[in-house]
Length: 357
Image 1: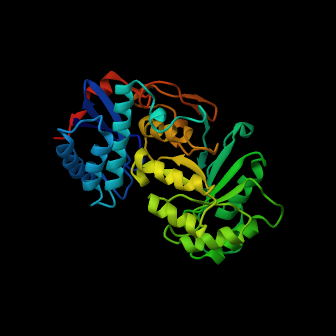
Image 2: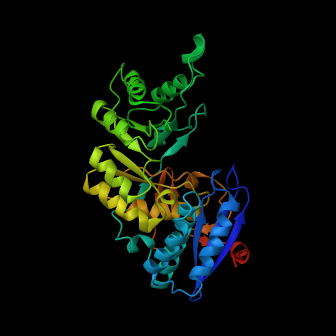
Image 3: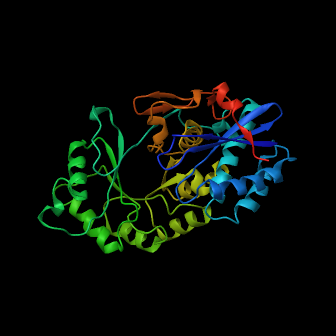
């Protein structure tokens, strides 16, 4: 197998997209390297070269063997390792789906549905979307502010904007409040949540990652004390941690982010543990093109629960590389029966891939 890389500028405000191709048996499988600010390309490229040298003579159809070998290298780098492993995992699933003539979701065990509702992420202070009746699920960012003067709870404050947004969306819209670990302890998070519920019960609200990623005990305390469901996102990075979450009762729902757990193969044990404990699971990705979004979408359709997926890239206009793939209708994404991930790249994009070695 040969690994090629393609840099797509302008797909991410913080950097650019880095796409990966695996060439084997006359077929190409595509993956995407998520590049957050904490793992820029100088960290990723040396690791990718080491992986390329390792798997150059390996058989792509032996996917588990290849991923075990890749994991032995990527596990040494806790920052870039999961990102590279996830991209190789995507590309191997895409490649093997094409070689076998089946979609990736069939390789994951088969889909329960073909359509997935997409959550729309709204940063603090952003304008609310027009035509709100068509919105089914939103994620509202909450940034805790220091106590200021008399305007600290005004309409322009974090709490003011959040309260306004909640009121504007009807009770039919599922609202996840993304606190991003902003609360220092469970007591602060509890006071915040109880304040939102003082006027009237809000059955459509959930609180996403209120405490630090590692504070599973604190999240368990919130699950026990609040009528508001608690969702964990950044805490979920392995099957081992998912087992701890279940044991402590630290979440009512989890979000499985592909690049955080290391790809589709690593995601499936996390999903199995959560679903066995009746914990809801949503799929997500932080990738910047349709390739990463497609991988998370194939995971979403094999989940038991019909929970919204966070795939912001599917809601963006002007996809820079893909000619076809899934179908979008309003806030729904529909997976079709194309082999692999189902994303077709433009010829000029495919020809621009450069060999890693």
